[in-house]
Image (cartoon, rainbow over all chains, first blue to last red; front, side, top):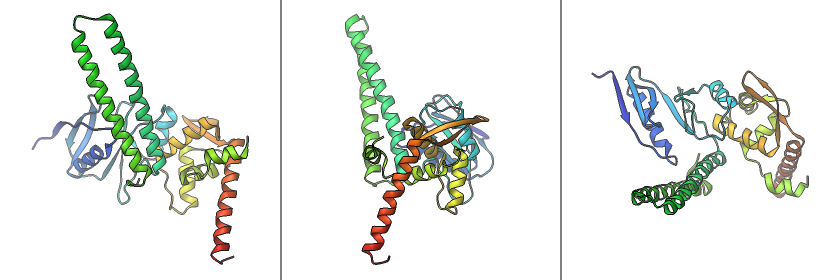
Length: 175
Length: 108
């Protein structure tokens, strides 16, 4: 049997439970996560012990030493290079499944931070579009297509995050 | 600061925010607050690290709490005057809820 494997797994900021649960399932089957790279979408595993391991994705506001110390003291282990903006944490458990967010308001704030980042991306893209149309490059059609596609991508993310927040606000999803 | 503005802006507090504020009557760092809250509620309330960090950053920004020291990469916070006022207003709100509830339900 193979001892190590690398798996690509895409995830979205409004649905990190999916990738968190997937990693937990891998651990249950004895595949221990050893590394996360390529903008946090490639996961390396080693065949080892069966573990009960909770994984959590966080999107904090301006994390300093204070942030990392708090998580460390609470028993969380960092699974990335601490560059952000996303941080992956894990913690072994026995009975009660630990969580980093224990109230709805904080989850909504986490989503709002993501929305603000994407809006910034939209503004940068608009600025680039303006530049391209003024400069009129020979390959401006290709660039315009890429920029317009990224606008669609950003729009999709914002809509999804807003819908997620709406569900949280109306208690359709509970923390 | 005007009482009405504070009430409108901050009340009611979430359960997490309420416990963070009452814990910071004494200087504590984030994990210290988590432990303290768990202890005084007999393990009923477990504030997650993400929720704790989010609340502390927001409350610091809003001036409800002030960092008073930094011990081995951990920030120690304490209630500010504004935070104390907000906490007092929340207590008054809760006391009114409780006493009206008891009066109306015939249990006082």
